[in-house]
Structure formats: C-alpha cells, structure tokens
Image (cartoon, rainbow, N blue to C red; front, top):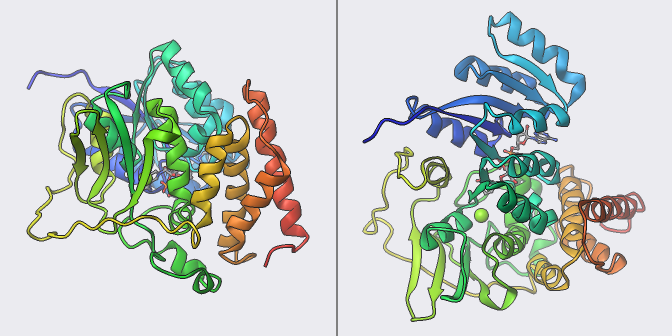
Length: 395
Ligand code: NAD
Ligand code: MG
C-alpha cells in the first residue's frame, strides 16, 4: 500500500460511545491518523484520561466553568496538550488548517455549531450528530458543498446507504431507500404495556451499545424518524422514495433499490467501528477491529413493518418531514427536552411522544430560510416543552 501522510483527527464528543469507537479505530492506524483535538461536554476526568492515552494537541471542554480543572489536570499529567473551553474555541479548532478530519459525535443540537463550522471549513466530516442534520440539514449540506467538505455519514444506516451508492448521490437511478430499524427493546409491545417502562429498560438496547439519549430514541422509534429526515438531506431523496423496515437482527444496516430491480444492502455485525473506518479511510478500506459476518452463526434475517400506533414518534417524524420548514427543528427540540425529562425520572415513556406532538401542534411549520429562524424555532419548542413539564400536564 502507498505511504499516506498522517492526518489529524478532531474527535468531538470524545468521551462518548462514538468517541470511544473512533479512538479505537484511530489507534489501530498510527501511521495514518492521530487524534489532534479531543472535545467533551463537561466530563473533565474522562477527557483527561483520554488525553493521557492519545496525547492530542488540544483538549476542549464545552462547560467553561471546567476550564481550570482541565488546564491544571493536563499540566499535572505533564502533557503539552493545550486546554480550551466553550463552543467558540471548539469552532475555531475544527476550522483550523491543522485539522484534516472532524468526527462530529456530540449528542443533540449542541453539536450544530461545531458541525457547521467543520462543513464551512471544507473538512472531511464524519457525521454522527444526526440532530444537527434534522435541525439544519439544508444549510449543512449547502455549506459543505460550497466549501468542498466531504460529508461521510456515520449513522450505520446512512453509512450503509453511502457504501451502496459509493457517494451521497441518489439521483434518478435510485427508486427507493429502505432504512432498517432493530425495533428497540420494546418491539412487539402494546401501547398499554409501554406506559410502565423504566429508564433502565429503555436504555438497554438489544443490539447496540450507545449513549443514553439515542438509546431512548431507539426505544421510542424517534431515532428512526430522525434518521428519515437525515437520509432526506444527505441523499437528496424525498419522502416517497424513503421507507422503514424493522429488522430485529440488526445485521442488514439498510438497503438501496435501483430502477432496474436490483437491491443492494450492506451487512455486518452491529459495531460502529465499521462505519468509522469507512469514514476515516474512504475510498480505501481499513481494518476496524470488527470481525466479518458469519451467516452460518446468524442464519436468520427477519423483516416486519413498524407499529406506528405503539410507537407514534415515527409517525410524528414523517409528519414533520412532510411539513418541512421549522417542523423538524421543533420535533427535535421537543424530543431532546422530553427524553432528558424521561431520563431524569420526571415523566413516563408515553409522555415523550405526547410532548412532541403537543409542540408540533402548538408551533406550526413556517419557512426555514435562515439559521436564525431554525434556532428560534428550536428555542421556542424547548421553552414550550419545559413549560408543559413544569405544569405537570404530562404524567
Ligand atoms: P454519548 O452520550 O455516549 O456521548 C456524547 C458526547 O457528547 C460526550 O462526549 C459528551 O461529553 C459530549 N457532549 C455533550 N454535550 C456537549 C456539548 N454541549 N458540547 C460538547 N460536547 C458535548 O452519545 P453517543 O451515543 O456517542 O452519540 C453521539 C451522537 O452520535 C448522537 O448524535 C447520536 O445520535 C449519534 N449516533 C450514535 C450512535 C452510537 O452507536 N452511539 C450511532 C449512530 C449515531
Ligand atoms: Mg442509526
């Protein structure tokens, strides 16, 4: 293989689940990649431990009150890593010419600013932060196209579609894109049974090990709804050509059907390191640490339609995608507030779709012609949902 210049990788959300998988793949290829920037929200101890292992040039904590702890911790460990705090510092570091690849793996709309900064700076952007695409998908893809940024989707479904298409272009020859869904821990449950589920049950995903927010989204099927909107923006495909199939084994990561009747799918064990290796190495294939798929050990592939009555979040996301404009921003923001309240034990599981539905009804879609309009819709939906929570209108 030809020699490659070593590329600098910024890992945003380094202390999370995707962050850990990224650093695992990076560490397998020291001649090709090094982690140059590590960023986290507020968990300074975990960030410091990663700095000792990976010796980045820069470490960033979003919570500015944690700056001194980060700076002192780095110096106590004898590291040359420079400490930074706050969102503006992160945006500057991902835009810097010293950074080649940005892994956007912050959870929630909090990741929008840095993801957009990386797109505007023309970086290779390994995009896991689906909420930023749901909130501002058109602005994100337009910024990336204008700056020549290469977006490689990391979400396993979109990464599968990207592999089938070998690009983000799904023009006339694609007749349908089918996202697969595991169905989450409550597949087959009735709506009545879902009223009683606990936080522990909801975050225990049967197939994937992930952060708490996306685990709850997988349990409500909102995750698949966000992914429909994500696919619409990434591949320029309208609602009529998008579909969802529940596939409990989580081995087929998505399918692309072409006009000639061919269907291509990508298969593999459910481990995000495959997607991350595709994103880092593309168009080369590099080792990820994930073994190949032995179909004799996994001989069954089942498929079924999603249950939109038991899992209304998927229906609400279809609705927001069709309404367009500010509706996806409202859907996402209300969902973030509701999931956080559920994780804190403040509301029951069925209140998540109820709060999202209420926000979509109270804040009808308006055209989303600017980032300000989208951020305002996001803020309004958060305020409204917080008010609903404070009024104990939802059990
Ligand atoms: P996680 O909760 O494990 O990690 C989140 C990371 O974001 C942490 O490092 C945290 O410190 C950081 N963070 C939180 N708020 C921040 C802020 N304001 N500023 C900077 N950093 C902040 O989450 P995860 O499971 O790794 O998911 C990350 C993103 O990737 C999400 O958007 C999720 O939907 C997406 N994703 C994850 C998986 C998966 O397998 N985990 C799969 C597909 C997509
Ligand atoms: Mg996914």
